[in-house]
Amino acid sequence: MDCKHITRVTLGNKYFIITFLLFVLNELVGKELQWVFLDAYFNDFIAPIIFLTLTNYMMSIYSKTRYVFSYKQLIFFFLYLSFFFECILPMTSNVYIADVFDLLAYALGTLMYQFLINKKSYEIRTPH
View: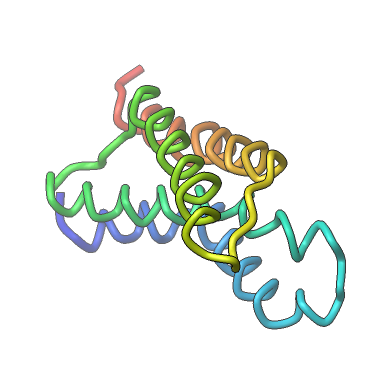
């Protein structure tokens, strides 16, 4: 599978594009709106979708085929993200605050990735 096709099917995924545009929009105007949800949790919700899609893209380029994350890999990603951003960073910096609702946002974002992007990749790769 060539790089152009991999790029088109991963970075060209409509859910990734929408998520990325929402992230940019939130960064540009979200602070002025002063909505607590947007300021505190929206980026935590969409970050897994962006991180996983970009990682998927790199893995697909490396393997020269469409990469699909396993459930174990997605669970590991969620646990790693949660541990790093909710345990390690709050202990080492005053900028980061541990928040249980962030865990919910990470989990929902990871599930959204699984059902909107990863599952679709699996269905396309698997002959019916």
